[in-house]
Every structure is written in C-alpha cells, then in structure tokens.
Length: 96
Image 1 (cartoon, rainbow, N blue to C red):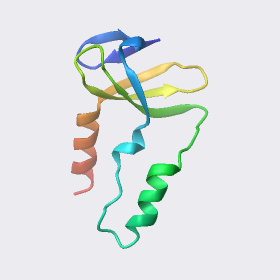
Image 2 (cartoon, rainbow, N blue to C red):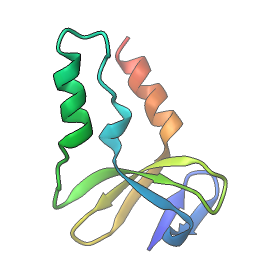
Image 3 (cartoon, rainbow, N blue to C red):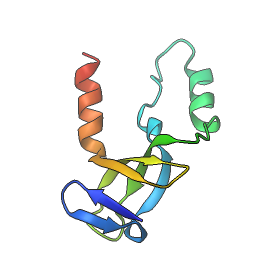
C-alpha cells in the first residue's frame, strides 16, 4: 500500500505506524461540565467503520510527521493524505 505523503510523495505504508481514528485529534475540553464522561468516551469508545475513514499515521521511518490519511477500509484504497498539523490548524480556525 502506498501513502501519498504531502511533502515527500508516494511512500510505502511500511514506513508508517498506524495510530487509529483521526478523531483522536479532537480531545474533549477538560474544563467542560461533563468532562469525565467525555474523556471516558474519548478513551474507550471507538467506531469500526466499513468504507471511507480518516486515520492517523506516523511517518516513523521517514520525516517523523503525522498524517491524516483518508482510506477506504473495505478496499484499502488511499484517497488522500494531509499533514495532521494542517488539519488541526484548519479545525482551530474553523471553530473561531
């Protein structure tokens, strides 16, 4: 499987370590009134989707960047990849 690294081009998936759902980047607010329940859900509840899904991948054997990879979990087709830092920045700017 080849991952289209946004800076380095196509890279073999063996260079990466898979972390899981990209929603892990959206940590709950620790000051929210129901923070304990939100963190419980954040840590222990995971979806197991069939189809297009956004995932976190770490380029361990390369430039050590974090990517958000959009992948079809049924076919393993990679639909795209973005730097996780860019995704986080866009999320912060969109919530202002």
